Length: 230
Image (cartoon, rainbow, N blue to C red; front, side, top):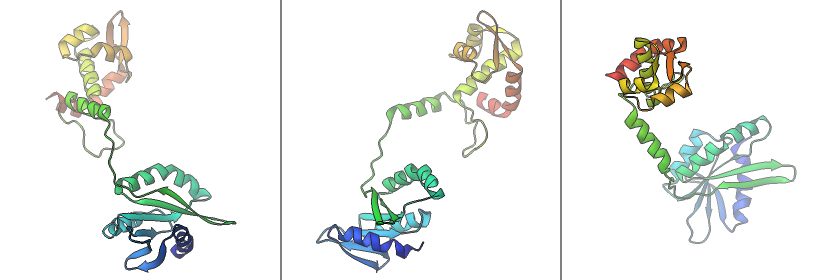
């Protein structure tokens, strides 16, 4: 498919709404004018790409009403489009860009408006922000490297679990209350009871010991745990 194949249905779609439409006006693929209204700019591409997004952003210097137009995905590409659809529309919404698709059918081409351009005002989620700030405050030191992938993150919870594990390694089986008092981990009882990582084993009422997995974890996270404990 060529980008020029997208132009006729886009032109017809806009003309049906009373716009006078012309192609390749200045740097704009499509420029539509209706009376004294803000002109509509449409940038055409055969797929949703970063260069298309850049084009749309540049056109916002001449109009507030800028659309990106791509073919509607069919066949194997349809599942890819569905997987990316939410991210694509969210990106366009954040950038204040509109999004059109053109579906080519036996009965003719159909233009679908997925998103109209509008100023972006992100909704802030206070509970989510509160959780982030709480985690930031509880985490001791800075044991992780920004941008890490494929490695476990040292969270405040994991730090507390490692403190409990260290105590059990050094002192042997102990009551949760004793571990809480010795380590200062307020949620020691919950950590030991839930055993989220498989590091702890109850040997008697309220008494826990370290498992081989817990010993391995202390070795594995030794560097990060030492940094957090300083």
